[in-house]
Image (cartoon, rainbow, N blue to C red; front, side, top):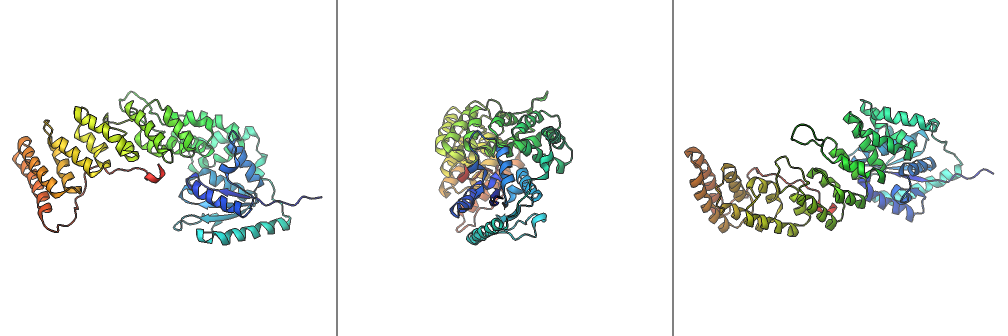
Length: 441
């Protein structure tokens, strides 16, 4: 007796949309719709590519969550291509209204609002029931004719291709190979051409196998040449690949970093990691001077620390101020000043305005701008402007330059003393902090 085909839904999504995929999976579970979402269905220790490949073979319907992340995901592209090859029913779910559905499925009716989910899930249930009653069988993908040896050769060929479209296809043999693809991808990380290395990092991120963590961590480290300046050609790609791993895995990477790393790459990795653990890891990296800075500042890494916990980080600054060591205004205005509260900005400015070391023109420019830009009390600003005028008279020898500085001070004073003065509108010369949203750290 012929068995009745069992409908099965595959949820295809980028890990950037993991939270939404989890909510959608819960809705399907509540509706008792059998489905596959990788995080729920793959047990610890199981091969991710093999389990995904098995689910793709079993799927009768595929819901694709379309977002900026899915457009860049090689795995989502592969899953959609695989489903089309098996003539699986594709259902696009547009997560961003401003986006458009990819051309080859643009003619399909798609979901574009969470408000329609209830209606959509009811429709999906009817679709699955209709499929079950029809008795239609979906044939295995013709790609199964590939042998393991063929796929290994194809993976290397596609990953090393100079053609971007071909490199994107490298995910296909990697998926079919499953565990056997991992050592090949690790070997590709040593390939002399950067485009092949980037492809390997991208696929390793999509697979997110624990065995790849040491290789991805090594990708964060610099490439050393005869030049004193360190280069980080793979750091950004390694960091983005690590973002597909769990917070626990990324915390483990942070705990074992033993070479120079860039702050912008660590900023990517810490998203979603426990704040307390993150702060401890950042403090260790900072104290051990692991944050790379082209100018060799002892304050590099502090913006991330201030972002997570300003109260914990400030005593370190007070200690440096008391010693007045390694506390130059260039580093402070780059790594500390933009990231602290108004009260602490006042302390920093007072430190420099009252410091026995004479400021240079760069310092004076920053002091004037800070007093003009930030929301300090007017009476407090007036006292500091008086002190600033004295410093300008003391340290600026050229008449024209001195008058230029004094003119700027007078403009700040006039603005503060004018009743109902308009809000500050100067163009800032200070570095603008670019940090992850606190809600995701």
